[in-house]
Length: 164
Image (cartoon, rainbow, N blue to C red; front, side):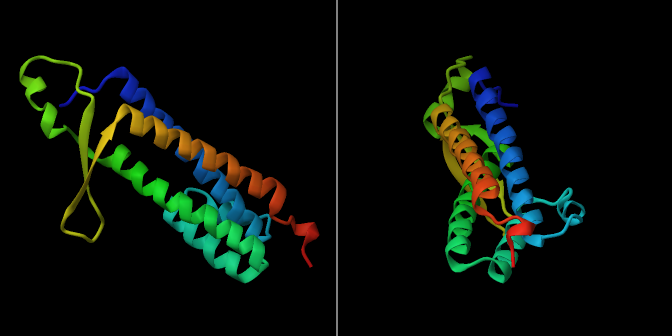
């Protein structure tokens, strides 16, 4: 097993925690769009893909074009970040080809890795070069989007009493 640096493990942890918060904000959006106090039962335990699809379908049904556009921009950004997150969190990690020799030299300063992941219903693997910097940037992007989605939920999305 490839041992990663503590900094990389911490950055991956930020990605995981940030994504949990992002998904929770998305669940809140779906609950608000459902306009039902039972909405929490519908979103409980649902994966990102379900929440995103539900938000899109409900957004088309209940939101005015301006708010729908704003929501869809946030959802599109979330989709790209989730794909990167899945590669980091679920990928198989290997040292980058330029740094494989360090494994045999007991070198612990591997700074770039390749991570590969099979996608559901596809035979090939997708891979990407990742570094501490790119994972830290991904974590920051996820945290920022979670805040913006939370703002959208709290300040832009109409509450039940405000809807006609």
